[in-house]
Image 1 (spheres, rainbow, N blue to C red):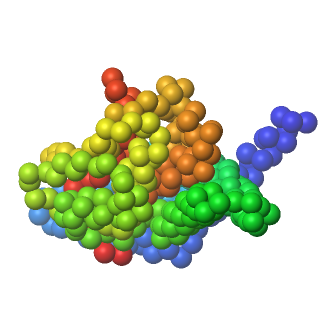
Image 2 (image 1 turned 180 degrees about the vertical axis):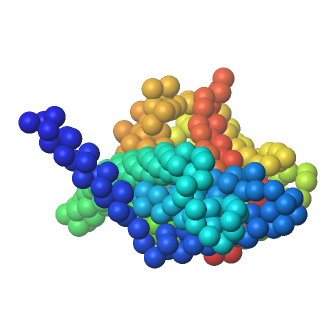
Length: 373
């Protein structure tokens, strides 16, 4: 039963391919045959020979089979081609003579070429559609995975500072009369730190919404590398005045296409993570290397580094360091996930690695033309 059912489905598919034809296919068939006839006529007038005229129509059959869908346009073109060769380029001219020697062979050969080419072209188109659908499904699956990781990171990073704010405010309200001034200031300070951290996360989320989900692209314009790095450090200093940052600006003045605000957000996230997670008082180095086709930005610290088993997934929205457990509101998950989203939307790459001392984050942007969307 399965064999018969498969045969019937194959037969139905063949018949569907056989009779499939649209107005566009008809127009393409007519246009290609007209061009082939004109070219064959010019050749015939110049050479006064009809030996190679059939080659023009054979080439036309290949084009028609490739540019149209189904077998009908190719079969119809084969019949018309044989008639044209017989009527226009074979003696007696402008008359049909089906008794000529070799005519059936010519007709059968052109028909076979047409059917085989049409079948091959249809198969290639079908395979292309299948591959395109598969790639689309994989892209959707990857997008869903990133969305799930982002939601998981958001839930973790929101829960911890909110718990801290609720706990500190409850302690203040319940023990206000028992607390001295320093203790009150400490509780309010903790509330302020957690609130600032929440504000930073909201800024990150708003940053991501600027990236269009459908095209995964950003509005880019030529921006100087020095100004972007300087502005990123300035924004970090406003948030963390005590941050020890050493900036090494490139000697060459370079402008590359980017969304400056988004790239600044990436650099702020990377430097902020280094401040909170390095566990070192040494300055954090921020520099850029100018390549022939790319510009690479590095943020390097002199701290404890990153667990090797977490390097592969650190940008997936789930990366947490051991020292973040005690101070969970400084988790790295959402910030690094957003960094990856922004850099990928710019057509670049981002990575992290451990050095002999400390860790280094780097992202690369192409030095291409700006594209104003």
